Length: 228
Image (cartoon, rainbow, N blue to C red; front, side):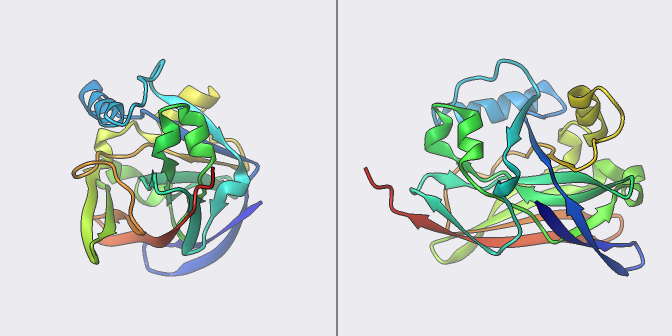
């Protein structure tokens, strides 16, 4: 399958690029320090999710689950989004975008891998070159908002400095310094503000305060009936 991005340069110019994808990896439990990891483990434990066998863990997701549309459909009322950095290669150069690791929370208590696989993974349409943010990576901020009772509510807001660096995640999973070609990887999420909960709209953002720019994507969720 293929993802399409507007690759934005620091001068504001854009280049339309097409990225073939043969492998999708979701890096889970990817906190940089154990306190942050433990916080997320306890968040999910409240939903019945067992502790991970090790950290980080790398989940493989079918590439057909990657979408860039503004509307998604999920079965049942139990899924929710997670704002995550997405990395991929283009012409031999590492690039950065944004994805939501949308996950079925009810199924997560049975199998984290299946709970991730069953939901589509919305992907933003903008991207940056990693080289443009490499020298101030830890200043980047992940944010998210949900629509709740008709109002947009802050749902996530945290620095990527709390998460393992993408280059470290690549090294640990692939035993090399470069992300393999035609592979995309999400790089973990930050804690929620309040409980993990579903919503009919999810907005995610990767904000660069140094260059004062953002990658942002909003999608709406239609909950299909769960028929017994």
